[in-house]
Amino acid sequence: MSVSATEASEYHSKDFDWETLRQEIESDPSLTYHLLPFISPQPQQQERRYLLKEFPELVSSGVGSKVLEIGCGNGSTALPILRGNDKIILYACDCSNETLQRAKEIVVASNVASVEHRFRPFYCDFATTGFPKWLACDYCRENFGQKDPSFISDVREERTIETDSLSMEERSYCIGGVDFITLIFTLSAVPLHIMPTALRECFSVLKPGGMLLFRDYGLYDMTMLRFEHDQRVGFREYMRSEGTRSYFFCLDTVRNLFICAGFIELEIEYCCVKSVNRRNGKSMKRVWVHGKFQKPA
Image (cartoon, rainbow, N blue to C red; front, side):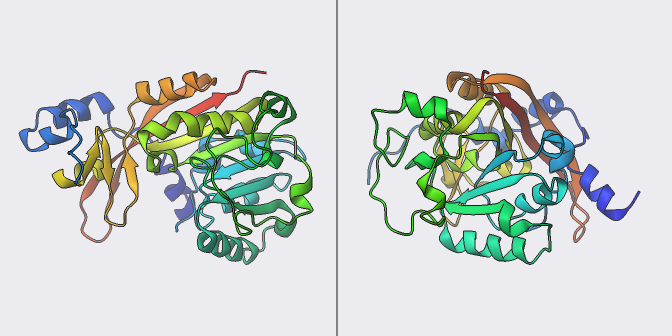
């Protein structure tokens, strides 16, 4: 097996049982603070090579299929998608203009076929302002006809000229919704109480029959156990040193969030991977939640 193939398989294996890990964590007294109910205080770049193997629908989709990548970062997810299917049009959003510019530079420099026509980055903080109207499918446009003409969301926010990086011509018509949404390690950074609204936004721009492909941090992942007590900001919710949130999902939480937003569950499971730090030789138990959800046709 080639080095790249080995790296790809490393991220979707079943190296250990999640229930066994749960028992280990819950029986360790030093980790009990992760499990306690949370009482709010009073006011005072590596490519994701596993992607196409886990989500083969992205490879098999036909000509003109539209994918929306939410939280594209520096393009580590965009590149495998664009490489794996030269028929796909990829709309990629992020809440940082600087990050979007970097992603565009990386993707354009990759020499992927026709990338300048197939990669369409734009600025959007989907959990706060919702998606721009031009992204909504025709069916959902009718249901949101009485709302703000610029955004689909119930949440309104003053926009600036930099809000969308697409041209005026591209924003002058509705693209008719998207066939796929990838939500990869993005939802966990959204505050828990906003997640239902964020997922309804996703539902609204997905074509009937379209799929949302999900992967995010799972309960008892190694990174959860590294957080200190004072970094807890909620139940299973933590604040990173740079100021971003990190929530750790169990299957029931993910299932309930998506079903309440209107999705049909196709598959959901824990991905339990044992990886080794090459610098110090230490073994790390990683836990992610993998899921596929569909909008009713």
